[in-house]
Length: 611
Image (cartoon, rainbow, N blue to C red):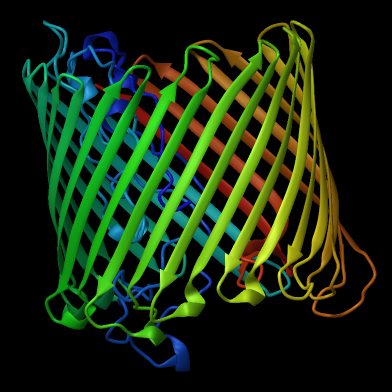
């Protein structure tokens, strides 16, 4: 959800206690994987099939931030150089910034469109994306690095349309770290990516990090990310992008403050109308209270287009986060409030360029009633309003109640109810949802355990019954550990969705699979997955049809080999028969397109060398 904080557990160990892999992962971490809904709005200026990009459209066909639709309501999968600035870490109230690893550099976005309209994570234990560490163990090597080679190949075949879409990626990455002195660390990463789907794209990224530990209470970070994107077949889309950011992090008693400022620019050599410059400021403050924290942030950014000043805009936001644990009943409460607004000097409703404000509030209350019984209450309220474009506005209420039961050391269960009201201003898209789910897990022996789950989902349209459906989802998983480090898992699933109206197709499937894994510690591990799915669907497009059945097999293989202490190889293979999934603008969700069966094949591998 927009404004929802991202939480990661901080690793406070000094550098000399970490392995080389952990040092690399801390300096260049992989971000959390989230979910993002595709945008239902069409790209502005794309109607009519006119040749060439319109003035308010980026040459690659995507929508620039100033002219584009609002951001997705769920966090996206973000690359390390696209993540939001990280919130400061939260050591105990009495502890100083004991190690430089407690200070994080901001993860610098290569394009703010990823976090458009979303306030920075309001969490005193925020993500440490992009963090680098200083203070290595005396006598350790001052120079180290990693060379990574990656190859990815994805082929999509659509037999009904006679269409073949390749998606090849070739990646080379080199990371270097140098310890200038006990208080300063420099890191440099170069990455080259060549990808091809409809055309070839060459991407080069250069990331520079400098961390200086001023004292046990303060640290300074400078980070610069430069990217160079080239389209050999369409040079009008070429552009260069740079973002430089400085951060000052200081702790004073129970207070910890972070100041951040950045300058960003993007240049199109052959399309100057899309050139822009941007200035970013952010202030974050954490106050450590007994058994909890108070966190607040304020951010401001301004973007100006040198050749297209009517696209200029200002972005402002603030966030507040409260977390506290209570020793009496061992409960814990978390509250989050974020507000964000964007103001355009020149609005254009037909190009989705209108000013808006967005408010997001969430809470979570965890209440252990007894050693075997636990209540959790969670809620989200969100509202976005466009003063000049009422139909694009929306709101959402999401309430979840969960009960966790622990019978003994071998048995546990969970029951949950979720209510979601998507209150779209365009009422034809508004709907309400109730989901009741439960699961039970039993460990029969030290080597055998079983887990079963069931979920019932009911949806009602606010107007009419086009989106109304009832869905049941039953799952089974049995795991057995065998001698010689072999593990086998049996997986089963039955899903059935029936709509009240004929507009959408009913469908159901049975899915069974077997997963086998073998591990040779520190040397070799392999996992093989084999599934078969019996898929059936009927009706749709306001037509009545019989059940159409199809068997869809799939297979996946994952291999990891440690060739030496400094050399590792990873290989992944996936082959699957399924259907294409597209975003439905009415139901606001991804749905299978049964007219587009898809044969998918994906191969990727990586080779890492540490020195």
